[in-house]
Image (cartoon, rainbow, N blue to C red; front, side, top):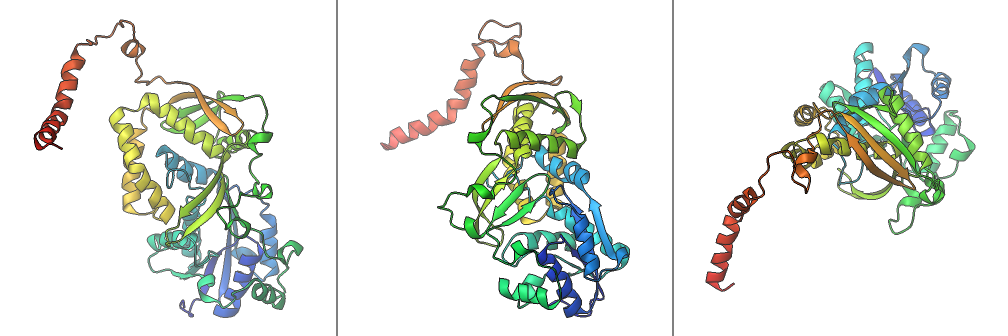
Amino acid sequence: MSDKSVKKVVLAYSGGLDTSIILKWLQTTYRCEVVTFTADLGQGEELGPARDKALLLGIKPENIFIEDLREEFVRDYVFPMFRANAAYEGVYLLGTSIARPLIAKKLIEIAEKLDADAVSHGATGKGNDQVRFELTAYALKPDVVVIAPWREWDLRSREQLLAFAEQHQIPIAKDKRGEAPFSVDANLLHASSEGKVLEDPAQEVPDYVYSRTISPEDAPDKPTVISIEFEKGDAVGIDGEKLSPATLLARLNDLGRDNGIGRLDLVENRFVGMKSRGMYETPGGTILAVAHRAIESITLDRGAAHLKDQIMPQYAELIYNGFWFSPEREMLQALIDKSQEFVAGSVRLKLYKGGVHVIGRSSPYSLYDQDLVTFEEGAVAYDHRDAAGFIKLNALRLRTLGQRKKKLGL
C-alpha cells in the first residue's frame, strides 16, 4: 500500500470510465488533491470530454492538464526508435511501449511544477505498462510515490467497478455497462487490441476488432506508388513534399490503412513473465520500417549494418521492458544515431494489398557501385583472381578442422 500521507497526486487520465473511477477512488481513499493529465498522442479521440469529465468530478480547472504531444512523440521517441529498426521479438514495432515513457515524463514534469508528491496510472497489475510508467517515474524523480490502484483496491469485477461508479455519480455510457469485448490502446503509431475475444490464440481475430486498416482482400486492385525522403535516418518527406514528423506519420497511416497494411497477430512474452496474445495495427510504421531498411541498404557499410542488427534485439527489449531512460538505452542510441549520419536519400515503394514492396532507392551517399558489381568488366579495378587467395585464407581453419575429423575417422 502506498503512503497515505500523499497530499497531491498527478493522474494519467484518459477521461474514460476506468480512469474516472480511479480519479474518484484517489479522492476518497487518499483524501488528496487530484491533478489530471491527458496526453494527445494521436489516439484519434476528442480530448474536450476528458476536461468536462474531470470538472464534473470536482477537479479544479487549474489542475486539468491536456497537452498535444504528437510532434514530440514522433520526433523524440518514434523516430529514434525507427533509426534502430527496432522490433520486439522480431515483429512488434513497439507502438504502446514507446508511448509510455513520454506520458510518464510529462506526469513527473507536472508533479515537479505543482509540488505534487505522487503520480498515478491506470495500468493493471498483470501487464507491461505498469512497469514502463513506474520505471520512468523513478528514473526521473527517485523520491516520487507511485499509486497503482489496480494493485491496491478491492474492486475485482466489472460489477464492483460499475457499482462504485454509480455510488459516486460517475457517468456510465450505455456501451460500458456490459463487459468490453476487448481492450484498445491507440496512438499515432499504432492501435493495439487484447483480451476477451482475443485471448484464445487459436481463434482468428474477428473483423470488428480492426480499427486502423481495411482488410488486404478489400484493398484496391491497383498498387499505390510513393517515395519517402530521408535525412540522417529520419523520414522528412513524401513524394517530394517536406512534412513534420507527426504529419508524415499520419500521412503514412492513411496510405497504409487504404492498402490494408500493418496488421499483426502476435503472441508475445510480457516482461512480467506470461505470454499474451495481441492484435496490432501499425500501418504507417510498417511502411516506414521497410523504407528505412531500404535506404540503409545503400548507405550503411556492412560492418555498421550488421552491428546494428546485432544490437537491435537488446535495444527493442529495453524499450519493451520500460528502460527508455536507462543509461544502456541512451548508450545504444548514441551508437545508432552515429550510424545514421549518411542515411539520406529517397526510397520508392509499391503498396499493394497488405504488402510494402521496395521498387527503388537512391542516395547522394550511396555505397553501391554499379561498376564494381557488374558482371561485365567494369571501370573499377577488381581482379577476379584476387578471390582465390581470399577464399583460401578463409578456408584455412575449415580445412584444418576437416583434416582432424578425417584423421579421427569421424
